[in-house]
Image 1 (cartoon, rainbow, N blue to C red):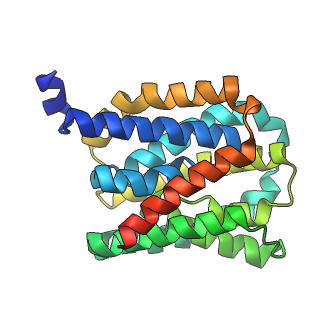
Image 2: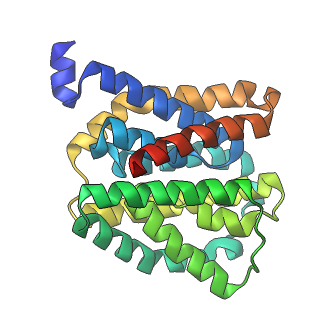
Length: 243
């Protein structure tokens, strides 16, 4: 056991806590369409800052890949294409912030991003959906996704009017493509190492279990209650980062 903990360079208690956070995040994302990073980023930043954003991006890709097979027929690339273009300058700005800002500033920024995500989820704003708003949402998604792996809220803001399955399918497709783009951006900036992939392998069972549990029991749960508990948890964590 000691040799395993030495191999992953993390105390057992921290590893178990991170596994639980990722399992919860995967469960919430599978059940509601997004939430892995919103739940995970503030909590993982407290437990092990080195995991943010790379490991969250890796698992955002994994969970989205598992989701998209259920909703592939709902995907409309024309709905997310312009937002994907906006991700390019957004990613560039995000990587600049990640490299230039000290950890204490990043903690406050990530907390603000999480709180923005909570507000977007709780209050059903209905901004116009057009080329300009899609591009701007893509830029914000790129900044948020590169800094904290939380690229969903700006896009969700424009998809509130979609039927639930269409929103889940388009979000999953968007996250698959943008996760790959963000990983490439982070790798080019020297922010991705073999250690991240080793850790991701050890956390993979927890993520798969969370996803499988959501498949089995999420439809029996009150979606609003599940979302409320999850948002309450990540709000407390975000406020903790701001203090």
